[in-house]
Length: 201
Image 1 (cartoon, rainbow, N blue to C red):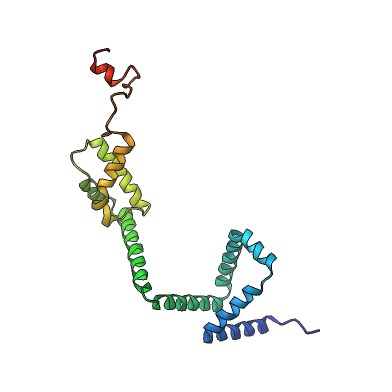
Image 2 (cartoon, one colour):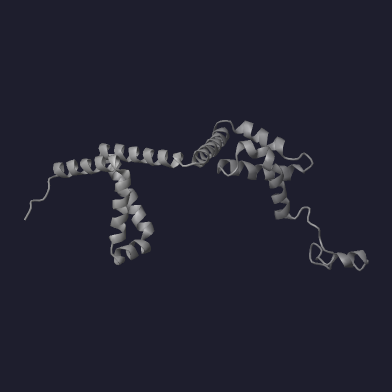
């Protein structure tokens, strides 16, 4: 019976494995695919039922390894960089990558403006809202817009373009400009608009 390997032996074996995977990425992917294909059906069924639990366990394991094993953490970063490099090399993906980072940068700029210069944000929001609306409606719309800026669902660069959208949303919510039917009940529930026109009330 063979002796169990020492931690130093395990570390050297892991290092050799990492070096081999780095030098032979195609063979490493093929070996991984063969391993997954050979996995028993009961294991695949377990992972299918407990996918979220397994993801959480693996993420926690990665966090602990990053903290306790600098060599492992550095290798993980290298693998991630290489994966991103290969993905960007695919035609069309580089522009997707740049567009994604432009969107992230725009969201961060919006949040910084909201956190560091809230007065400038308030001025910009109110300037984008129509002056024809009553002040209480402008206040409600401005509040909704600033909340979405804080939640990063509205970009500062889009405030002027989307102001009309928020005005329409407010009008739909509070029925301020909705066409009413003559059969609609009057406020208070006393008759309808038809009764009012016929002089019945």
